[in-house]
Image (cartoon, rainbow, N blue to C red; front, top):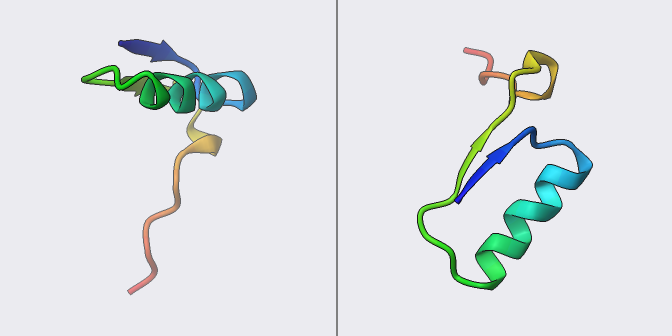
Length: 41
């Protein structure tokens, strides 16, 4: 299952996909400010 955008609704979609045991779940978010920050050395 593919999910475009992982904001509020997209994150909910990922949780629903996992709930119904969809595999694989691929989430794409083009907005870089939502990406996790790399750990500081």
